[in-house]
Length: 259
Image (cartoon, rainbow, N blue to C red; front, side, top):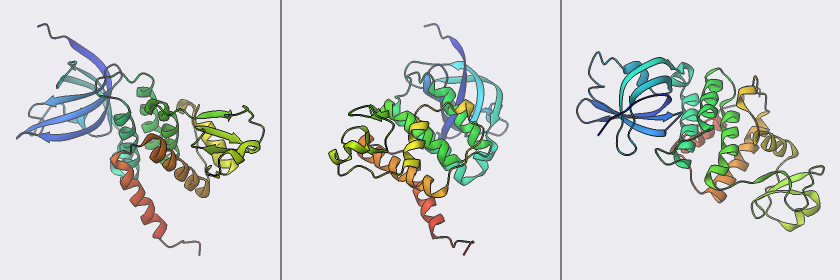
């Protein structure tokens, strides 16, 4: 069997020790989706590819990519680690959560299309100091369709109106205008500001984002709404979400310096 060497761009999602001195590295690739690579002797001193398999690293890779089973790397070029993400526990958790979202949405080996560049830009923005929760929220909203849940964010699902106050309805799978709020007494009672951001997030190009300024109360509401949607309508939660929730609880218990 002829083994073909491939060149591809990738983002290191995770890695784990394997056998006595080897390592398994999961990489999100631009051409082949998520692939697991076996690196022999990766835990030995002086391993030449070490810089390119650090968590939260972006690089150009050369290797043998197999349709099933483990793949193999032979060379790595232009490796750059997102250092702020790697060094900060909060940024690390948000980046891991974003990786977790795509990990659950796509089976291994299935190309992810536009998502590769979207995830790469999300990590870049987080690493550059922009609000990690809001960036994760954008990914959450846009990723819904990959789970088979695609709310109508354009306007009211009944009459299409967008010129009246809107609220989100799980029962109707999207927005209801004020004229139809009586149709769903269990609508989420979201504020106009939160609905504005959710609608904006659904079409936002992260490559055009230069700054983020969202008030804490609105951020808390966005987190509540998206938690409900993912819990009730999607039904899956990345492992990193539990840690993010714990961190938020810790922060909520801290004394307010302004008092």
